[in-house]
Image (cartoon, rainbow, N blue to C red; front, side):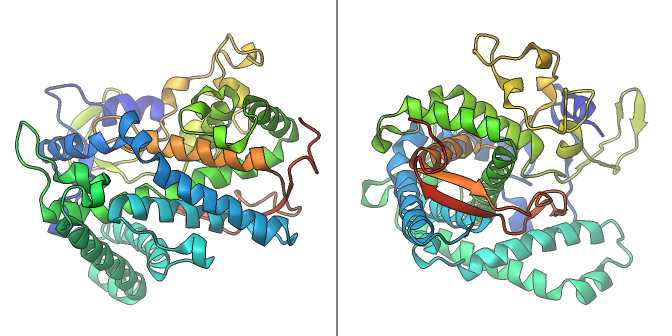
Length: 422
């Protein structure tokens, strides 16, 4: 269903109303301990502990770690692609960056992908695991033949997904064993372990169960959003020119670009939000299950799967003018010089790329901080173009909960070689 109906009536139920829970079938008891699948009462307790890791203050504390990997990305682009003139698959390198960041913030060590210029084998297992999860959900709609379908078609994918969960369990247990603040450094596990006035921190099993979800949610989705950002930015040359101008006029040197200083880049924020609208990282989120409730005066029987599709909602012309066009101006305040009243009637309330309600994405602040930093650093330092012949990069993609992305090849240039902007 459309988000204008689903967001308020399925995802944000009022107190006293029965909740539409996430699909429960097909997961083991450890998976139920994660923030994404646990019961409402348990979820609130878990979210309270982990939420402290994603406050603005907490993210500022992690800026040195985040910045370290963005510095490394910039150096790798310079040496491997600017100096040589070689083309770059931005999808791959954004994944290298975001997976290295989230691994360090979670386990205290990175996957090493930026250094090695290669995916860690476990990251490849994550991609297979996402496909396996989508297949698992589909199989579970046919309970009589589900065991056979899984055995015949899903064996290799399930084994890779299992290997990834085992790896994250081992890493999380090792990190828990180091205590709350190893070497005086706070990370996500610090906040999960810390007790509060209502009781102890999260258990080892809860942390081990949540770690796989945290790594995926804090990496692949951010890389997807930025991949869509670079694709659509380079489809609209006038937008790219405006954005590059904003970034390069805001800073006189690269060291000035930080989490806090990029907050004021209104056009950059508008471009990122428009990229999320055009290319939501989770275009078809997992369904919710009806408890037996009415939606739009229609009774939905208990056990019925209810789907809200972000992609369809965000491209609905009833909600957005020129819904299939990349127009960052639709997100600007009326006080901005580039504000366009043509978009005044857009339904911003249906735009929920991080979901909505008590189970929305807890990492929204971190995602935007990373996206602003990466986009600002790269567009300040380099000129860039998407190579010709890739106009169908988005339209040919399939989805398995997340986009199954192909390579997106860019060419990087020294600053000023392509854009004559101060």
